[in-house]
Length: 430
Image (tube, rainbow, N blue to C red; front, side):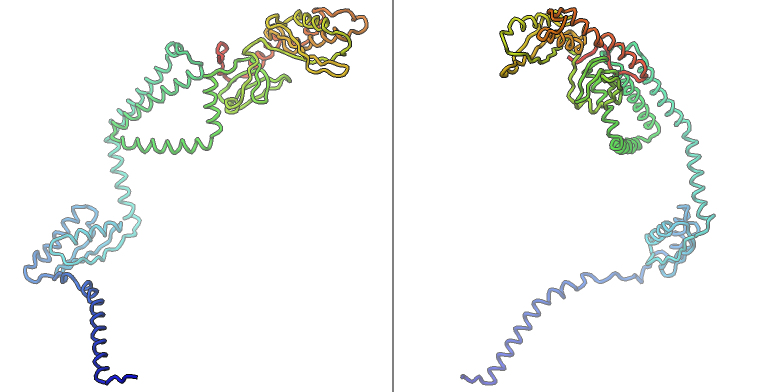
């Protein structure tokens, strides 16, 4: 192992210490340089001291007195140091007095010894003064306010006058419900124009934005609260415009069947075959599939009959078709027809078709008469073994309720209900 002399070891240690000191100085030096103050703090001048203490105090008192709400604040100045004393009603008054004193020329610093006055009479007096000032301000603006009210009333009266011209609005090809809705819109438009003009006269047009915003928020809240009611009302407007049915129409709305009584602003009223009054919300009616049997008064009915397959049934089938065409209410164009639905080992199932004019004969009566007549033809019994005649079937059809009696029942039900009908008898969706 090599031996290092002591002098060489000390030299190396010295070099290492010098390098470490240089590294530490390079790292710490910028930090001390940044922490050093850029400029020395400002000194309070001794020579040329500016205004004297008395002038400073007088100037501060003058400003505070001119404001009118700081007359009870005391001012004392000693060597440029301002001391504020006294009592104020509001903390804001004390803060304002401190700012005024600090901005005065020659003031070095400000000390506040102002206390808040908790006296009831002192605190209520400014409120009473402001109320009196507002009252007299309102009195001064009373003539202008009356003019604004008169302008608003004039616009409202003009809207009501225009909406009341029945002869003018009756010329529009609209149903009464839509016409009334349009008249309400006209009144609202004129009232809105009058409100804007009145606010402009009063110089309060900025208030209109606040009113509109508040009305929008209120309307949104009410819309969510009465969503179903609004939906029914909008659906009633659309149904009154489209007129998909009219009174006494035989309709199937969804899975509900009956004859239409009325269309109100909330629901569609129907009379079922059992004589019950049925109310369906207009929102459901508008979204449902509507099958109107009365749009085309010619309706087809059908029924099945199973006969024995012995022999040739052609002659009897032809006789059955002829008999169906002669029953009261059935149509010759389109005429009766049939088709074989099923052939068994000893039977044949036949489906008969016939058309009826529901304005003269009910569908149920015509179908019942046709079933009885055709069955007697294929299955004669007793003394009625002879071929049935159309008069035999007409007797059966007469038992069923005819369309005239159905219309009478509907009209009686409509008369008992006093709600307004939005349907127009002459209008129907094409």
